[in-house]
Image 1: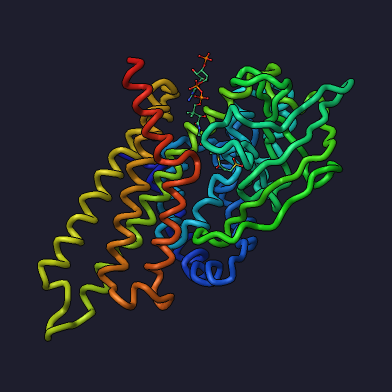
Image 2 (image 1 turned 60 degrees about the vertical axis):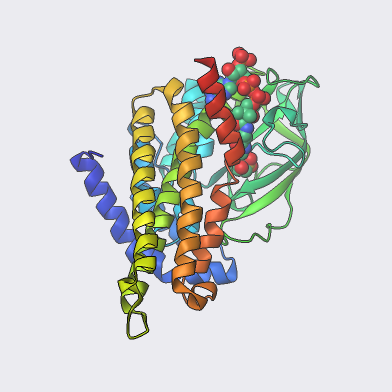
Length: 380
Ligand SMILES: CC(C)(COP(=O)(O)OP(=O)(O)OC[C@H]1O[C@@H](n2cnc3c(N)ncnc32)[C@H](O)[C@@H]1OP(=O)(O)O)[C@@H](O)C(=O)NCCC(=O)NCCSC(=O)CCS(=O)O
């Protein structure tokens, strides 16, 4: 993978930031399931929250490769903290790709300042993989839309200032009646949040249900043409799945480093366990799988940088699926190499294994990724 000088400098600065600010809190935020709010100004000042915001609006104007580099570096220490890099992606991407000039002029300079948190609300209790089954309704009433319904799993929802909420503008099935609405959730009556989900892993990253009761949203906050929002959701997912893949890559690299360090110092039968072939083969498999995932992640990122969206969709699914399955295997093997110490909280191996599981599920399960890959193959 060839990186430009600018990309290498960016990667170095994120690596240093992660060693200084993320590594020391990684175990504690997991232990306490605490949102690491102290990282918000640090990331904001480095442009990490608002990576995608173009330079013309005051943002860093990062490309997909840089988003992936940031996620990879931070996830070596904590995937929860990695998810905060490009936190604004899922809100900003539909806006950048499908918003009107007026909407971009209004919202993007605000995001560029690096203190505004945003989220996306797509999934519902009965509409996860099947996005088009959503039931949240938006009914036009004069110069407003009135939103009613329930969203589920909203990442960072209860700390967000703005949420891109997807709703249907009529009762029909299919995807031709879905629209995204930018909602100023802290200043709009009718929006309430449920309890932060008690997850197995990725603790400290918030996931909440959202209840929408007669939420009045100005017409000018609907993105694009009414009913044409499904493509905006898919574009955001196509551009964010590689970032989940990159976080999986970083997580696996962190787990492999831990396993290598441990295998070198742990002595059994009179020698370091790294001298046993059984351990060496496991470490070699980890390294091979990590490098294979890296190739796929950054090939995919370059397709995104070129704006080749037709290619990107399938590559994004391949990268997300392959890298997250790989991270599950590598983190599980890291726990195995650490033995009993891998299974307890004295080492981060068990946290990494718990975190890895979510990557196979969110942003579209790996079964959905395989379905997208197969559909692309068969349509060709
Ligand atoms: C399963 C899906 C991939 C597809 O769903 P459908 O089978 O319902 O839709 P299709 O018939 O495939 O497509 C309908 C329509 O859209 C066009 N399309 C499809 N994909 C794309 C794309 N990537 N880019 C552009 N356009 C696209 C397609 O050509 C059709 O157009 P025509 O009607 O022919 O003109 C999808 O539902 C899916 O990805 N499901 C997974 C959802 C997911 O990832 N959810 C996670 C959400 S994020 C999260 O978990 C955080 C929490 S949050 O609050 O939600």
